[in-house]
Image (cartoon, rainbow, N blue to C red; front, side, top):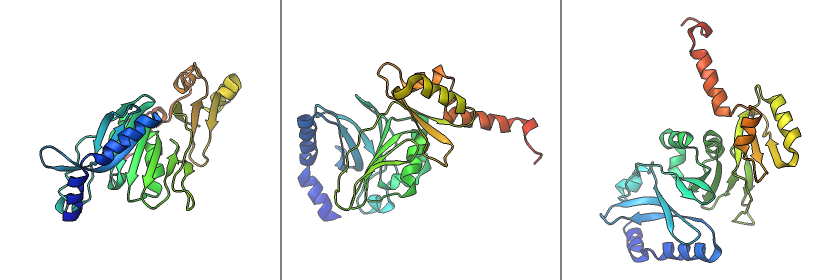
Length: 253
């Protein structure tokens, strides 16, 4: 760890500066994750989101550090989970060990990011799909030495790296809504009939929930759902909880 911190000190902002230049050269956003030395002398494990012009748009500090990160490396846990505004939507970040913990996930469930960026030494397995579904968000993962990829808001893997190619590209449409099938079957049929190729209704199977994606430039997925009175998944679950909260709908304890 002492050698690593000596390297961090020598590295300074060189790698960050390189990433910022790559973003400028390619007109793209980038997520750069690394140990970060603050002016007060403390350390964080951070993801910095870089914009198309090379500016740092926002910083996420890992909320759930591994104990040894602090005891051996002096890295302190972050205390906030910001949504970072990009020109394509709002981005949430998670780093490695974070994926095991409810407090940060619950913050993102409430905040509703458009995209979650996950940088890690740990793959997370089923937790990747669960996070994407629970947060109703697309998720992009970068996992050292293991498959990395893109997941949909219904927890499906859209694209993944392989043993031959350690990188992956995919086009995704963030203009989408997750809805349950209950009470919506005929409405979804009517939606398809009305908008045709301008809407996609994707069923991942076994989940009872489907993903509505707008392919129209002038109508959003949210507006489509409102137009056909299609109940969102979270609204359906909230209504179900409200139902069983009524004394007349509950068996005696």
